[in-house]
Structures are given as C-alpha cells and as structure tokens.
Image (cartoon, rainbow, N blue to C red; front, side):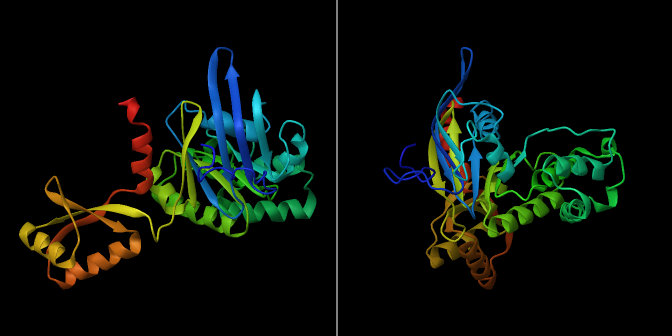
Length: 316
C-alpha cells in the first residue's frame, strides 16, 4: 500500500511520533501470517485496522507490543524499535489484547496495583492513578471484588484500565468492544476520542465497522497479510448510504425528486447517498417539512463497510 493514505509518503522518512510500519513480514513455519504490511498511525488520531479473521491484524499488534519479532521490515513506536529498544517501547505503549484474561483470585484493584508496580508506580501516586482509572471505566464500585466475578464486558473495561496505567502515548487495542453492552460501547468511544484529543496515538482493531466509522480518523484495510487500502474518514465529507421508507412511497419519491436527491429501490423502501451526518439531518428535516410520512430513516452502509466489502469480495 505504498504511498496510500495509511502509509508515510515516499521519501519523507519515518516520522518520530505515532506508529510506523514499513514492509513488515512474519511467518510461523510454513504459514505466512504477515506478508507485506505498511501503515502510519498518527498522534492525535484514531486509526482503525480492519480485515477478516486470519488477515494478520493480531500478529502485527503483537509485534508492536514487543511480543513478536518481524522477519523483515521495520516497526517504530514513537520513534523506538520494538526489537532493539523494547523497554522504551513498553514504557510508552498501552496494549490491550483481545481476551487478555485476568488473575481471578485477585481483587480488581489489586490487578491494577500489580501492573502499576511493574511500571515502578507505587504509593500514593499509584493509588490515585488506579482510582482515576477505575472511575474512567466505571469499575470503581467493583474495586474490591474478585476479578473472577466480572462479566466479559467488565473484564474488557478492566483491560482498558490496565492498558492506561502507565499513561501511554500510544494505545494498541485489539477488539476492545468485545462483550460490551451498548452503553459501555458508547462510553468506550468517548474515552478513545478524549485520549486521541490529548495527542495520543490510537490503533484499534475491530469487526464493528459502523462504530469505527463514527470514531476513526483514518482506516487501514488488511487482507491475506497485506495492507491493501487506506483511507481518511471524515464524517463531514464521507458519503453514506441511508435507507428510507414511507407509508406513502409516491409522496417520498416525489419529494426526493423535488429536492434533487437521487434514489434507488431497496426492498420496500429507497436508498440515497448523502455527504455525511449533517446532510442526512438536513434531508430528514426537509422531508418532514414536506409532510412525507416516513416510517424509516437509517444508515444502510457506511463508506468503511463499503470499502471493506469491496476489497474482501473474493471471500464470497
């Protein structure tokens, strides 16, 4: 994907901040997990890493977390090499794997105390940091309960708190929304946006493309161990498909024609393309003012979903 939106520009040299991956390859015996990955996750942004199962996303994240060594290519985390400078990388990295597990015999607070101690954070400073993180992920009321009583979603929130103990400048999150209820997913989105606004680099992998569309600044699509497409995501400019239905289809079609909005048939309704949420809101307002009896008005497929389906079409 050299020169694509997810990669550094040709000849520009690797930037100091963020995550920079160039031409990385990694095999496990005869199995080639990562063949040629190149991407750049920038400070102050959320970069989505998406692809089908077995596409190499987790393998790449393990290399960023200093847990695997690439066979070739280069990786930099805030300018540091995970292979030759693992301590520097770990000091700056917050790593949340998918299904990390917990020490079930320990209390929730004790799990974070051990992680804080590993980073050299002790005493009052550690207790204050832990209290702040437990409030952030809404686990403060469970701080003195054994970790084994936590639900899957609560363990995911504990995993996020654990990844933030060392106040990292780079966050690598592998399927962080797994097991979260709708409210917790909304809270997770808000937390990630706040962290990015503080200037942190966030690289997140998820299969929930509609949610990534809402929070990610850019996306890198991977398949068969390769980065195959990158794109910048802007809610204000990204074209999104909306599906509309009405108890009076003729009135709906007439209103859309009068407003100059092209539409196509989609089941019992119609589908239109609008330039982001603002345009969708404006269209809804105009249809209501035109007394069109709408029974449905909702996103049909985001730009991220469309791009993903296009580049993975050979899996059908």
